Image 1 (cartoon, rainbow, N blue to C red):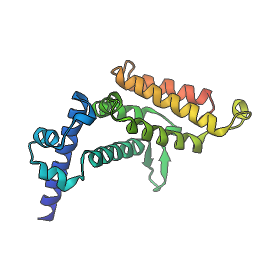
Image 2 (image 1 turned 60 degrees about the horizontal axis):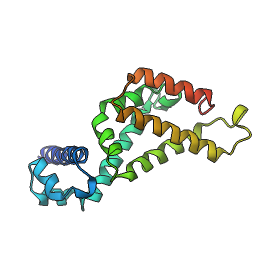
Image 3 (image 1 turned 180 degrees about the vertical axis):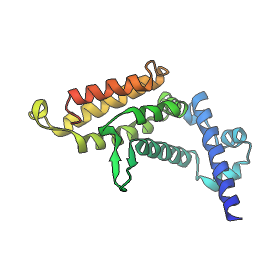
Length: 189
């Protein structure tokens, strides 16, 4: 019995997320109401409030879920149980993830009422770059923080451009070029 309840809750939350994402792609975040979300999900507004405090809570949980999935797309567990960082070996999994979730990322990045999304994405990317950047060679005379911010902003800006322009290169082409740029600039070894 509990499995059925969990599946219903999961389906309801998914319907709320999908309704919210669709609405964000159609109108400014500030003009979206809980009634709009409930109507689009074909549920009553009390159900939305059962799962989320308000539209800001829904936005934060939607962002968290999708950014966590983005991070998951960059790692895998090998046969011995160790986590392997795929960014060090290939950007393809993350570019494929962006392509598969294009609607969500395009909606979040295009809606100027949601600057927090880009900020949180940038924070995740820069923290990863900071862990992996090679400060030797061409970077040795530069501030690690400055290089990290520069490369993180460049990466997020390119991803934003790629998504908002309907992915003019295939995920494999974009991954290959981004990998080359970061390697050339000693962000990765």
